[in-house]
Image: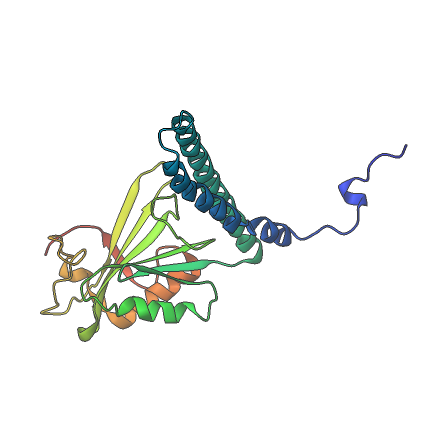
Length: 238
């Protein structure tokens, strides 16, 4: 009986990106339907309340829901990892911008400058925005994400803004820098860490909005602390 074909003898190899794309196509809607159906069973259970089997059925339903939700969380993580692997194979990075509390994404280089422009002019003045670059959309801050992030606060009407770049090392150490303006403008507005925050950026961290934009576009290309502007160790106050 002949030996099974080895991978090298079985024909042309499928590109890794195609394999990852298929793995990313996880049918989450199927498990969502199972969760919905199991949750709706509680209505029927209430109709047989008092039956000797009622208590055990409720316990079983709770156990099934826990298992289904854990399975969904695991599948979602599997999908996200496969998306990241596919994008890395194809040289794609995804910019995630949090603007006015909502997330927006761009994975094409020609779309990222428009995303930056929206970031610079939020509808809620003084509210901090955030920008991330990763191998996938950064959809949930409760889960591990990219090591680098940029906080953006602007005074759009005055064409001024400030950046705070934060990076977490593999050892868990958090490093933080503000932009640095060697020639700070007299009378520059006070820009705060976030709307209502007592923390204020130093005035020599405030830059013209055009320079902030250039730095952010650079970040969407590299994911690193931009070199087009100067930086200083993070500090607060005047």
